[in-house]
Image (cartoon, rainbow, N blue to C red; front, side, top):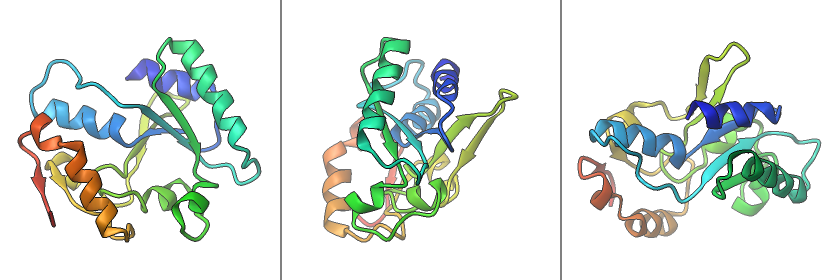
Length: 167
């Protein structure tokens, strides 16, 4: 984890974080006593730069991360433009953007500061993630998508201690 955070920090992204399943799964693996990480679908890197909304910049950053680490799973998204794809009003910050993510336990992002401290953003708090609860984020309004997404992930087979709220 520290290596990944360090590589992301080296990109000097404005408000750059590793987020979502990378963080959530790490915590759930730990809470379930797993000694190896469950496989990741991707490594979500998010940043916020309203001055540069070109998706090609994100693709170049993904390539840099893949070359630096040898890991093909990097996915980079500028949250300043994601409101368009998600059908929301323009996001004001990283915290604002991830507050619209489907699950509260997924809406978490971490970064490695210059002094090597880890800081985090979690608009819905950390309780659901640390208490293994899956619930829809209050600002995520597509109930059908949420239901399909969570059921399709089959998280209960990977992390049996999870509690699902509203399914």
